[in-house]
Image (cartoon, rainbow, N blue to C red):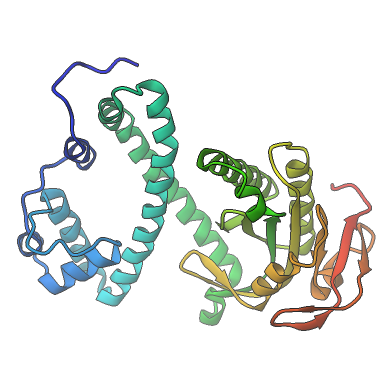
Length: 328
């Protein structure tokens, strides 16, 4: 890819290309332009995950416009500041991780395209593909918001049910990940994690589940029903087991109430699913008793293992499972 010849570029040039404006306003000035108290503006800025800029002119008109939009939404709908801060914090956490992730992906591509002019090619990409990915971001947000609304509708109309529901929670955990990463360089570790996460995401999506989060060597997912969770787990083993670049994997599943909040899930079943991976054998699925009770007996075969201590749950009998009848 050819980059138009120009003067040598700096990181500041790249930041300006991404932001689309020249910083020239202090926090006091941007709050005044937005018609918002300085203390509230600073609180929202911190909620996004950014440090206080002090008296530095770190903002531009786009920042003032964003604050004004938030103020208008609060005024029209009567939203409390605490609610706005929580929503802003959710955006900040998510976008920060997204930015780091995408930058890591693009960094290797920039190195491949122009190893001697990395800032130049990065500046070029920011101006060409940046707007397209910005549109993709808005589109993806709308689609995921619609999906989230559908999940809430399924939980019921009672207020207590908006955050609590019964679901099957699954943990997929790579075997001997720490020992393996000690033998790999940084690029190899990054590739391994990327392959593992992308394979798991594909399987979970294909089986109508939902990936909640990834933790490097493990993936947490949800399924609406135990049989769907088992099928996801078995497919993950099939996919990971066939990939010579990846180590073996252990799967733990538990079914029960979960609390859905801030893009994460909590509850005893989440903790138990994670603990069960510690007692699972390589490329095997281990489930709890409640999950086993809910499985169609004609389609699955379960077998109890000897009781063993599981941290936080005392002695429990893990249960192995396999499918005996093909999926519909």
